[in-house]
Amino acid sequence: MNLKHNDPTGSILDLLRKEKKCYDEVLGLMNEQMHAIEQEDEKSLNAIIEKKENILQTAGDNEIRLEQARAEFSRKELAEAGKQAGGLRMEVESVLAQIIEMENNCQAELKARKFLTQDKILDLKQRKNLLKGYGTSQRVKPKISKNV
Image (cartoon, rainbow, N blue to C red; front, side):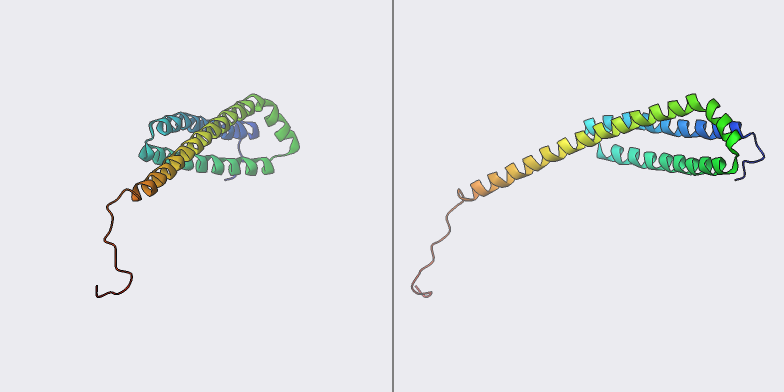
């Protein structure tokens, strides 16, 4: 994609808007993801994670186009675009910070649930071992001869 023919500032701003839109969608999905974790809805959680992966792939492609655009423009054009895109860039950074915070919260919640599940499994194993001693006694086999 050759962006040299377009207004450099406009093309960079357009790419940043697209990137912010992707991250806003991911932020919305993060709220759904947290709700799915709280509801212990694994099917919904997997669907949300898949949607996030697709959106993040699009954002990554957009990031590559942005880097290509930066490489094609002169320093003067980049400086002008940087001035105009400063506010938008700050918005993107803010959304990314929120996404990272929510992702960390989801990770902490999943770890807590994992340890809780592990504790339950260990408790069940201990109960099973304790109950083995209370079973019916088996027939005592002779110790001298098998024919007795």
